[in-house]
Length: 220
Image (cartoon, rainbow, N blue to C red):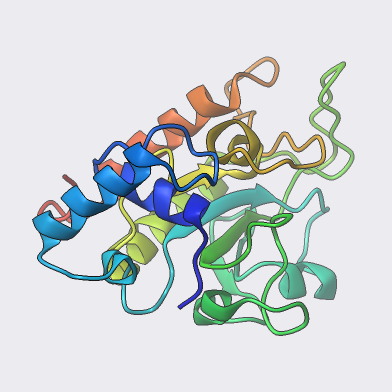
């Protein structure tokens, strides 16, 4: 599998170890955290800290689209959730992200597609962050619940811990992983909010929902 130092740092943090800042620098704290994790999991290579499928993160999005899935959306995400909460597979299976290449997997997050499953709500056409306008196809609670249930299933299947570093929205990628994005604010708004909020706080709220949806023996 392919992974960067930044990927390893995020994985270590997700597993409960402390690599220091998620900055892509293979420093002393990163090496110490990796050594502690390898000892804890009784493995001799950092790659064995990842699941066998090479998938280690889930990124949440919205399509900024109207009602109804279209081809560009199916090509861009591994899974899409419609307004009724029904999940649909995109053109690329999740496993394609393990060895990401343009045209051979879903390109859902700038410079952060390898090992990351893209799950998108088909919503928010015409939405605007400031001044806030929710557009003609705002997120629905059924849609969010569908995304949460799908995320719980994927976490269980691919050994992805539910944490800020491994299950996060597109809007959290830059502040949490330090990977520059292009003014993304999905998902910083939920249907009971008057305006977008802090992406990490909204992400924490969604992650709590995922943990509640996980099988009880896997939620810890």
